[in-house]
Picture 1 (cartoon, each protein chain N blue to C red):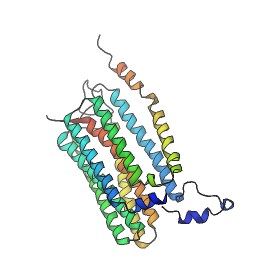
Picture 2 (picture 1 turned 45 degrees about the horizontal axis):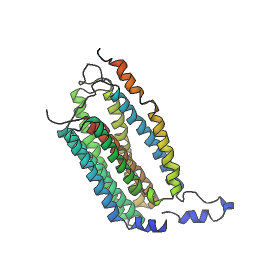
Picture 3 (picture 1 turned 180 degrees about the vertical axis):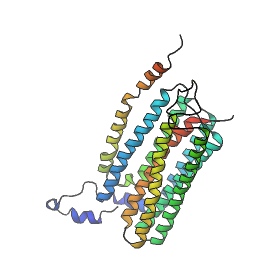
Picture 4 (picture 1 turned 30 degrees about the horizontal axis):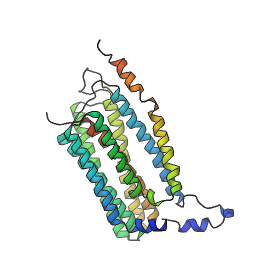
Length: 105
Length: 216
């Protein structure tokens, strides 16, 4: 941990690299919006990039990478489980769409 | 990391044991708040997506120019305020008070610019006729009444977080200047600020980029 710690303290270049990569990924996202990709691929690429950006912010800006692993284990897995549980009822939205706007025979 | 005080406390199991995370209790408190707040925002984003899927013609009111460009500038403001926050924490850890205050000032400026641009965007959309339970877009008529509700709830809650963050940074800067708040407090405040940035990394693509129109 102490080696990581020293790395974190002297890491202005590291933080600038993270910042620039966040900006580059944002620029890619905006470019994709300009290209008007189909909804499916667009959603997958955008969410993929957003997850990478979130991971970078949590790991480096919020320092989680340099904390004890037990903190990560306490916070992140339970958060992911709760998010998955929130998605449990999501397929119902497709059914709701069919009910509200029945396909014309 | 702030283990100096922790070592003393954890000297013996009989004196309270060793803290499992080796961080100050306030920092752990902030982390737990952040996780619960992240679940709140996740719930709102999932509600937004749910209603979008369940609607026939979800509006795409964000023209590439100016809406998406302005939202991109807002994203730039938040991302940049995050790196200045990192600088403020680093300066505070090194005991450089004036440098810490300078970086906190830049962070607040970034947040303030975000709020101004966002409020102006709300003003434009309201002028176009967007309300929580009705909007001027969507066919068949009335198929997307909840666009405004989800949009205002999501971005409104986020804007509230940014506003609270800017106020918190001001209080933090004043307290740090007077010596009341040590570097640890700046770091814990920074955690909150980065979280606000983090949430925007999901609102921006899901609400804005997925509803962008080019041309017309």
